[in-house]
Image 1 (cartoon, rainbow, N blue to C red):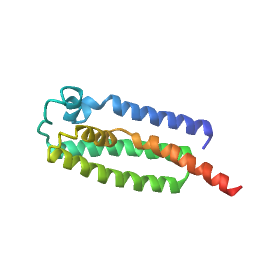
Image 2 (cartoon, one colour):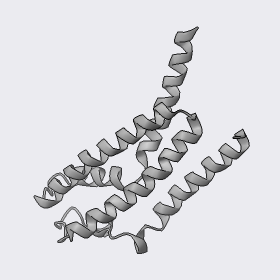
Image 3 (tube, rainbow, N blue to C red):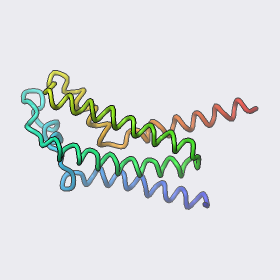
Image 4 (tube, one colour):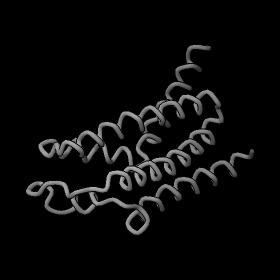
Length: 147
């Protein structure tokens, strides 16, 4: 694939990540969005429909993950990096969704920041911004060791 086509596709995929973030309100069930925008220090978390909420979390995470994996593959064109990223995303989802469930189910409001950040890692494509520099640095390190 030509370099200009790859760059164009990468830009399009980043635009898709931005659109998912921008169009969150009408398409995803997220009552915590309003909770963290308003008086979260003085009120407790509202009653959630856990099934619907976690299905929406999974759906949004899945969309962000597919786009992020495509970006990683287009940038590095490396199946090992892609395979590692898939395993990383699956493990991260399992750990973070379990943490979020425990925090919400047992109403851990003292650590509202922990709930906020765990939720943020699940609903926003932050991992792609961690993995891209990590793979880049690894590639540079491998080139240095081959010399």
